[in-house]
Image (tube, rainbow, N blue to C red):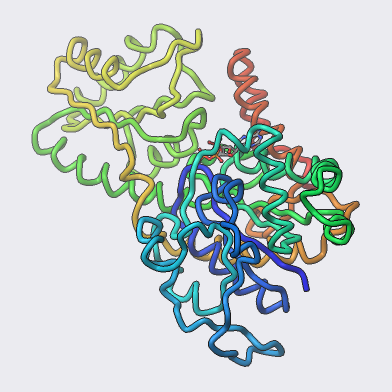
Length: 411
Ligand code: ATP
């Protein structure tokens, strides 16, 4: 059978658990064996301690699915207990774990990622990827679904590109048998964009973005009432790295008075320009001022614009009581909103379909959504275009940067 492993990597985002749940259930439904990899690439590099290479568990029973028997392990909370408890729940030294239907039960509404995530420097090196390949082969896994940002997905594609040479090296150094080398001549992969930044090219939405936006809007609504009561100005910095997607969507949602996004930087005279506009609003009776700042905000000379700069400017030039708030990690956490749950479920299903249908000739796909339709995007191009957006911004080619957020290669 095809053995599909599901993992999460990079920064966590709401909906990752829902995506893992969906991919695990779909894999089982399709008759594959489902595994999870704990702690992102770090877990894959570490693998399972000697004696538990197979990552197997003994089913305690089988439930009859549509037309397949589904293994159940009667310990549905095995992974839910969380990573810190791994020692006590029998997962010590095991990062690649066979899972059944019951293991992911109830995961839809959980925030963060229950199988853990990590940044892993070793996976950036060939030696780390060699260990990862060995660990996958030891467990007999031949398909990998990874949910993460552009960095994690670059790593996924790299693993697949190098796969034959990794297998050859493992075989030449007697780390795997000829039979294993033959059986694992190719690796099927697919990606799901899990990132709140909304910076991934080619997809209208990435997993976690709707929840992060909801958290931001809730926070600014609360801030707004104080701002109005005290006639204050608030500068709110939101996440998104080099992308202004969260900032601009939040600005529309709360009716902000001014917004700074990296893709449309203001001139170096932004202080005067901003204050002119805000002053006029105050003159006609507006009691509160809300300015939203993307964390990657810059001016047209690429100088960073910081929340404190904006606050000081409002205080000095507008002569209002001005405060600044950096929302930080409240944007990431908590229960996924319905839109993220739906997105995660549909993308998890399609990610598994993509690996089940993959052949050595098909490109690696990342699953996205465009015009309300789930689509497969060529992973390499999508990642490349995502990186080119930042390059265009650095070269002050802002129109080109914006155009690349919505490229045409998927048509
Ligand atoms: P987020 O956007 O939420 O921060 P991300 O997936 O972009 O998520 P990164 O820290 O860039 O987060 O990447 C996560 C991990 O993926 C890295 O720690 C590293 O192990 C692996 N990785 C990233 N880039 C590469 C690469 N070019 N080659 C191999 N592995 C990589």
